[in-house]
Image (cartoon, rainbow, N blue to C red; front, side, top):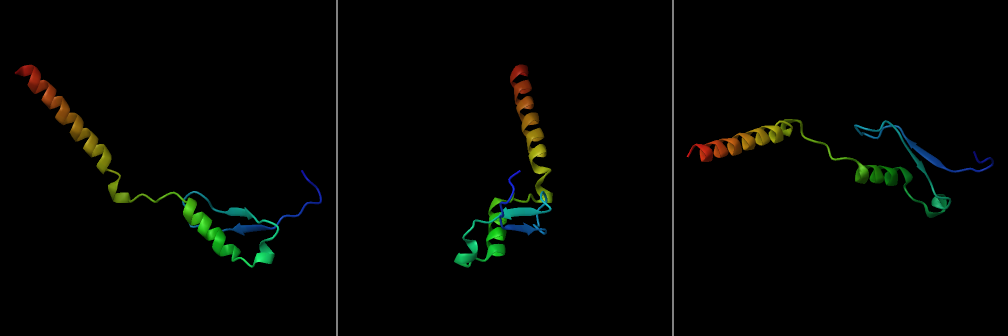
Length: 83
């Protein structure tokens, strides 16, 4: 632990994320001098780095298509062996 060292920290409690409840951002020393919208910048970083949300209705599509493709390939192999 470093004693006597001060950093400016921004805490975002509402990240609107499925994964994170809170996010901590440690600011650079010259942020106050540049007049940057700190919260807006933190929200921009969160949006750029968040995982894309999956649509609930499409989850069944990949397993069903995989099953149907496997069934079709198996049927073609059996047909070729019988002929």
